[in-house]
Image (cartoon, rainbow, N blue to C red; front, side, top):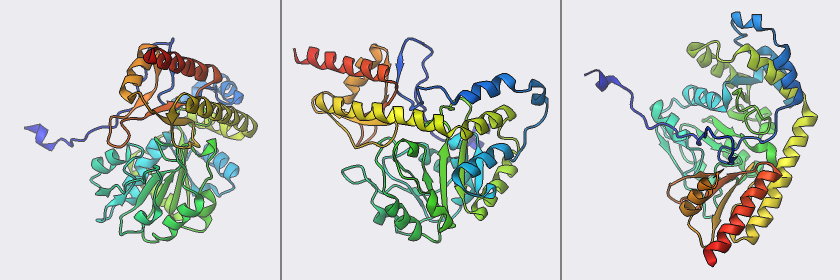
Length: 353
């Protein structure tokens, strides 16, 4: 009888994390390069005795480092255990109205999970045929708006002037722009934060800063938005981020040179992959993220997905309407890209024979 009181939801399905070491892992958009060198030094020198103490609930060291890097006040920064934690807190804090929240039909698949979990009504305006967001679809009555930019899993970027059109057109709603992949060639909406107190920009250390294993995400917005977020966070769990993560995150954020160098390497590999994949008969939106969303003109995506996996190359496949002929492929190292491309060349040649 107790099951009648259970909250039942369909959970988010993360990308597979295989236990094998001998694979080419291109399915979860992790950075293939190590984090900033100072992070290893911080790990070595961290005083283990500090772990007996509770961490700083405000994560002040990390918050201040982020604020300095993005030229905002520390009171405009909120940190959490990965951007998923930040986004979940934002859903819980800001999406409390009766009107449905809006997010695209093809997008990050955690949004509908959180909406269902928290009992938030939602509606999903469809992307156009080129997988682009149509700003006019977000000028209807709503209880809030959230979308990734660049979008996932497509990698398509909405220009900032169009982001501003959505934000300016919704003064009665909080607009959340999820910029998990913006560092790989996108234009951030962060400059708009000073003009619009209803805009929250969310970013992560998991992609461009190579710290997916430590789980650090952050949001930047008006002081009022951040104050409301902290009220909910401290009503939920005051100690969400541990001391070691705070120290490593601060060190990572402060090494701008290494960050720029690593991002540039990934961008260069991505652009080379675009050329070689196109020559092999693949098509894809023009991604500015650290992944490509590819389909082949003659070979079904499920077939390619299975063949890749059999050969130790993991990519992501979504069996969903509109995108079930696409594979999402993380941009890894040049060596990983070569292995992927060599597999495609051989597989396509053998298939034609």
